[in-house]
Image (cartoon, rainbow over all chains, first blue to last red; front, top):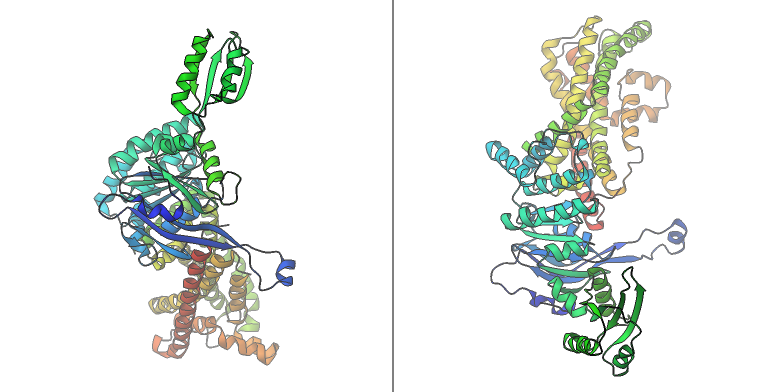
Length: 356
Length: 270
């Protein structure tokens, strides 16, 4: 696992050869539009929003890489800089060794951005016509183009529906079509910006399975996924990066980050929430921050507590409860949700926060 | 080039999916020739002397003016409208993220509108022929060259409007100013000589700086008065100068606007 402050992030790359993505000290700021009165009062003043600040990291070929962070963290700006749609103010980014600023057309031959926005499709045209248009823009020709279109339609499961106009598609089908369009040119890097944003939970789950099974694995391309969804990051990503206010706060495997930032809370299901052994355990510091929940229909009560000593001490706590004759139906470590994880990393890493 | 053709095809298929609007725009244009014919016949006795050297009757003068106007409007307006549509639908950013070159994308975005305007011109000419419009059809090859130069010249103005659309999301009525201005004082619907008789001198002088003045005069002389191309070389030369200047200005404006949009990250913002 790599967990580092931005200055340490250069060491993330470990394999030999050119990384799929290399970002070095990448920064982007945007001028804030001011009101007329403010402009007249201070004509030369300017307010800036730092969308991306000194981000450095590397993503290896074939990796499924997650980009996590709250709204306004800088994920989309980072994507747009990689897709050559926005130019960086400072630093540089390279896709398979090609600088996004020096040779943007070469970068566009390797990288395919997929926005969650279904508006990017031509709704009055069929899926086939949409794909034909972009296949031509990606310089595919003749029989190669037709074969590739047929192939990607099969990959995304739209074969048979390709002659329907996009306007008649469901949201899930449109998302698949967006992916199909991006896959046309056999991208070496696929940028997915919140691909399940407009999908219901079941469709989102199916879509994640499709991404892992059909997109990342077989094609071997590097996938960078910007998401708010914890499930998505845990299910799909080899590593995740956490961004907040444009700064890269942490990089590493999602589960490892979760372990690192977990606060060792456990849930005990018992019939004896008021037993004296709880006070004894608290008294000797084995547990603290005890929260007793309500009694369920079967008469069992959930007790949540923090075990500062970690798993070893937790086993001792369980042994003590059993020795005291308590009825215990469950003793589980509470997994930190990724949302909590982001919150905790942000709190720990953000300068000036109480936890920092 | 293939990228441009693919975009033209997609725009054609999109437009054709609105079948009723598509048919009505052709039918309406053909029908429009009826009032044009009668208005022209009514005004012919008064304007006959003023249009000497640009056609023998006012109906023919108006028909060629209508053709030039349709092409002028398409050349100026098609690019900013296509860019606005692309921004609003979210397709612009996506096509700019493909490896296709910017010039081919711009041509592709506007090509359908220009071809459609050309088709509409043919409908006007066909309908006018039914009403007795006499033209030297053998000269239409030469006329097509001049009309293409008019389109290229005004496409440069359209590129400036397109650059404004990319940079500011609004064009500030630039297209309307160019289209209406060129039509009013460029001799599209009445001869520029009339302007010099009524309007102040400075206003009449403006028509010397309107590319349409030279373009439409050359087209009428070639198609209606049967002048050979070499006889209108002065007008064609002036149009050529305007063409180079407008296209150069349009290219600079578009390059600057795209650079600015990339720097400010506003390529796809509404």
